[in-house]
Amino acid sequence: MLWASGTNEFSAYMPATAAIEPFLIPEDQSTIEKLKSADYMTATASVEKGGDVNLQFAHQLSKVTLNISYTNQYSGDEVVSALKIGKIPNSTPDNNVIKQAGESYVPYPFVADKKLSEVAQQSYTAIVIPGSYYDTGTYSYFMTMTIGGTEVKFKANDFLQNYNALQAGKAYTFNVQVGENQATISQASVKAWSGTDPLDEVEPENPYTTVTLVPRADSENGRFFTTWNTNDEVFTTALTADYIKVTGTMHRHARYIDIHS
Image (cartoon, rainbow, N blue to C red; front, side):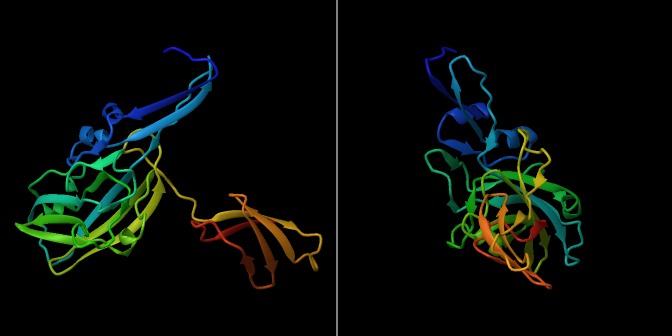
């Protein structure tokens, strides 16, 4: 490595094939090696000449995990010959940087021709392009399974059809219930995805915004405060005996307020 004078810019990619743009997300991710080959990560650093180069890699794709169950319409002895997560029709990354190689994703650790009762005891994971499944009529199915020779299609639920539903660096878990007459998909969790192994444990996203209350000089009986949350956004808060009223725009992930007096 040859240092240039002043500030040096560094870029790194994982896996090794990621340096060849666009990165193609493989369709077959059914083994751990194939799943790892789909985990596109990047890192950048600005370092003065002779300084330490610390690269922190970030996941550029989304991880999806499926927990499958089935209704009593099935015996459990039916053979599952295919399990695929559908291609995402409305992806957010630049098409010149990341592309979907196929029309679907075969998740890890799917093995064809197992009984439905065996499939339902296993969680399946795939790494997919960020984006959404809003209904375009072409790729509006979130997943398909072939059970006992019959293909069962699972239409994307409302969450998956929202704009930017699947985001880079996030891990999503869905509960999928299979029935002969209907199939349902429910979202179990959204978590921040860290670590360089695609099967690393992930930490839940903070479901609330933490705020600090500071009495204002013009407060009446100490009932008015200026507040800051963890994103340095300012609110004006009025307290009553029964509730806390917040005026202002909360961070979009905020659902609850944890108050520190």
